[in-house]
Image 1 (cartoon, rainbow, N blue to C red):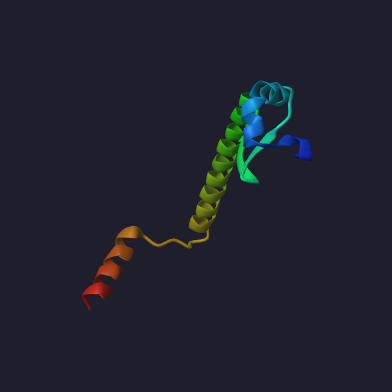
Image 2 (cartoon, helix red, strand yellow):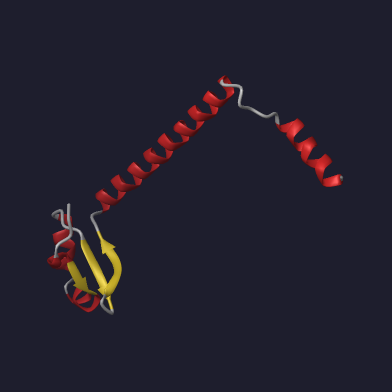
Amino acid sequence: MGISASDVTPLLHARANFLELAEDVKAGAEKIITKNGESYIALIDASRLDYNHQLERERIHLLLIDEASKGLDDVVAGKVKYALSTIQSIKRRRSA
């Protein structure tokens, strides 16, 4: 859903017409509230906010699965370093 000029409301107007804005948002609109001519906050339906948070969590989970898959591919390809030997190597270089 795109934002149109009617969805942009100055803060003073939003304060005076909050119930009307809330009804518009509940009906599916999204409102951008401006302060001093610049974007300040967004007003969206609570269920849409919940949905957006759910999508964000799912995206994070997919990214974690992708990173784990890449790590397993590295293990299969032999592109691994063992932590203990790597730490010992770093310590030897620091002491030298």
